[in-house]
Image 1: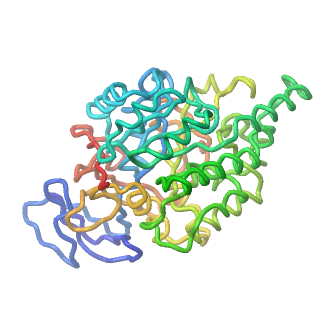
Image 2: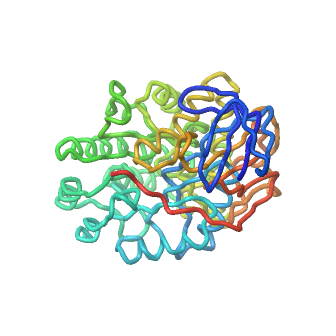
Image 3: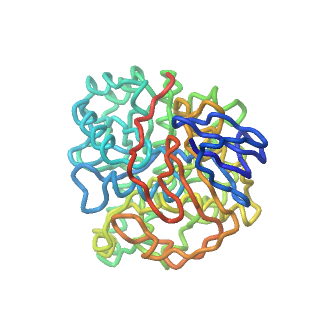
Length: 442
């Protein structure tokens, strides 16, 4: 048993001063004061306790790309950042586009993940029958790249898209950028600037028009077929009108996500960071950047995620045209949002809603995302006032770099519990227990 005392529990839109008793991996009791003589006690005086963060979009690069990252390494970075559950993408090598390959990936998670895990089944133009075999109760969703990706994962055949949207057995998650628009922009800028292109051109090549065209198509298909659709990493003010904020999240058939780097950075930051913040969809101008936070607060955007996508420093140090897209984020996702909190732009309760509750609701995750009696004890202790600086000495990413190196954050994850196990505490990992496969109530 584990007893957390003197906590400030942030859960379901309220802050409650209480003790929390954990037994057999679950929250046994929440009360103003609890006595448990045989329990290990952690005094949480001055700290928040929040439900574990659920990140619905990460790239942990395994199998096949483990020179960049692995499920083991990135899940450790995740728990150090307060992320207790993740949903990982299929664009690895080989791509996760058969049920056999999906099962093999779950086996890797079972033996190596410090956090709870789920993996998307990837769609292609020619694996329709495999997609239909996806189990909605044990797989987070079907991933469709409606824009370029690794390998054979661009789904641009209209007939295939119609069939998948019409008959998908579970939630579809989409990356939306119109491939024809991106290619035309790329050819135009390449013809004009050639090898002198830099990351500053990235939001012009992967522009707002490309995003809106693709997102509009996805929403149109979902409405036509009644599909449960989740659009990943929205980056433009233009797309926000596609989403409804007049109904409760539980009733939405179409939901949307924003990522922390799109909330934090804007296109002017390419001058400083260059390829380090090159990502797809691109980080865009201040007008788009500012609109995203407003839409998050008024519930047009439902979920905060990372799209954690590490590459090696050597890969990122190449020219713009050769450097891959993506950046490591999962260890600092809560810190980015605490930055907005300390500026008075978002409340602690809303951070918990968007990072913990909303992913659980949108994906129908079983017994997680809320700090309730009976739920799994995925909990994070946070010191909201502690200041610290990101450095290579405190990075857990396999790639061992971060765009936040040298940045001073206010607020720090002190402890992380996964299924009641104290996996991260006082800057130390306890890997004696692994995370569990997520289950879904569908």
